[in-house]
Image 1 (spheres, rainbow, N blue to C red):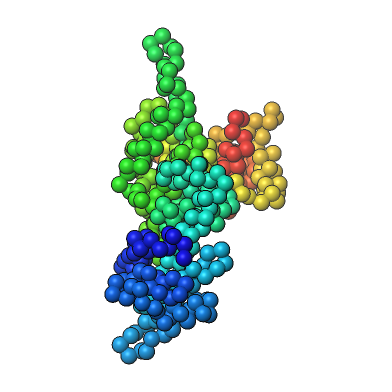
Image 2: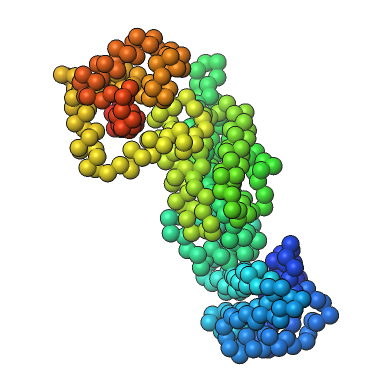
Length: 410
């Protein structure tokens, strides 16, 4: 068996990690079915009959225990491979679903360590991965790729004891550095745009957040972006998880608000199980920031709900643009081609206030008579009447988002 597998400390730590919180008996054996590590230390060195059968069959199997006194318990065994060769076996006894699930996790952990051992001795890999910090940065970089290399990722994550099976999201922070000037109007050296020490200091403060744990990664994605890969235990209550993310973002906003060297925007992407879709979560977060800055440039923290119409409009079908949006804009456009944005923004304010004139006037500081006049003008030009038609109200929201995205300077 590989040297790493013979390390009893590693095997015992693995057993404790996956037995914790579960009523399981766990054995890890070598290729001859001898127990190398176990929750029952008195069995070390003995042969396990279930392991012998699993190794002989060379595939996982579960054996239901007698119902009397055993409930839904079973003995589950799964072989361990390295380079397509048998290297040992994991045997678990306990509740059937838990035993099979934890058995697969242990198998993946050990096989990943074996693969890492082989990979770390290949070509120049050992020279590029000298420290844990280097490895964690590489893990983050690979996780945020559109198509991560899972075979390379798993050994690295196992080495750093990062569980690949958790639920994760990516929180993105986009920074815009300011220039600092002295009394003579000259830029102060070391405090100008894109300053690396300031970026590292900001990342360091975020790492100290009590919301983060050893499974989370704070990564300097580029000179203007910090990505936090935040993990959660699997849950049947996604809304509660999203609420927790928003609380974390609020805390990060306060932390970053202490810096005068940059302005920033923060958002987060969708939650995904496992490690294959975190690049998508990163892209979602960055898109929400972009859309949010177009709609609410004074804000620093953005959530999907605030830019829902912008998000829909960003991915709208071309037929809707050509059949609905552009014809309306043609009717609205003045002779010089300019779009009367005040007309649209007023109508949007009315829709955002639940089609209530008094609320729109109070919330947006526009006299109700002005709102009424502008809505009549919009109706005469386009036929859109949000007072009487919900569909027209929806079109107005989409139109406002479309103008922000495609006609920002007009």
